[in-house]
Image 1 (cartoon, rainbow, N blue to C red):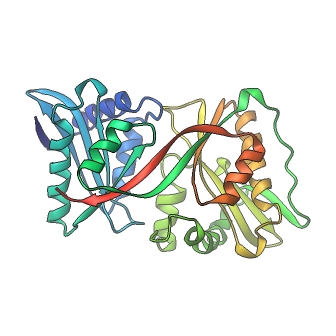
Image 2: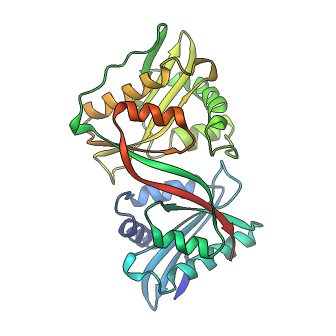
Length: 301
């Protein structure tokens, strides 16, 4: 097995093909993949070859919101346990070490026993765990949206000038999310470009809670043409002073109603296990368990 660094679009198309085959429940398009790389501070991509056949792929990326390099690694099930994963791990480790990192973070699906065993054998330990959830929109009626008195729910498309207020919500809310203690909220322009205007972000699919002239919360979807029937929840954030008053429930209800009316068939999300408020809210709306992720941190090879 040999891991080679790649840069050409055709090589990235092959990487995405391998990724989608290894993770068919969460496919992406090449443009989604390239947009993700373009948002990074630094990144490198690799393919693993068995002679001249590509059988695995990996990306290592330093995102604007993190200091530790983040790694995604995919090997088709039929080619596991043949050295592709080890070759890719060595390649991303070499790149990380060249850039001054001694550790990396990698997500593994919580039902992937082989992937977890691969990581544990190399000294990786669990850092956080996210439970997967899915809502079948075909089986429900659109919920009513009942915000607290004095609060209005509207889309960002209706009021694009509210971006600064949404940023203030993010600054206050994201550090309170369990597992996001080391998350670095970017300065406003970077946050706007990478978190709110990336390829999967749509102003009409972003909902804002407004109390008078003050933005007190927002919720957004992440969308992709590779999954035309599925919308992914991205973030639901509410200012501390307004929590526990029904703002998040109204935002979530608006999202569900919009998604059903827009023809989506299911909603997917992942919740950090310690985030009890959002887990209770999702259970109230009828979300059901789905595969989740375990995030592990470990040493470079």
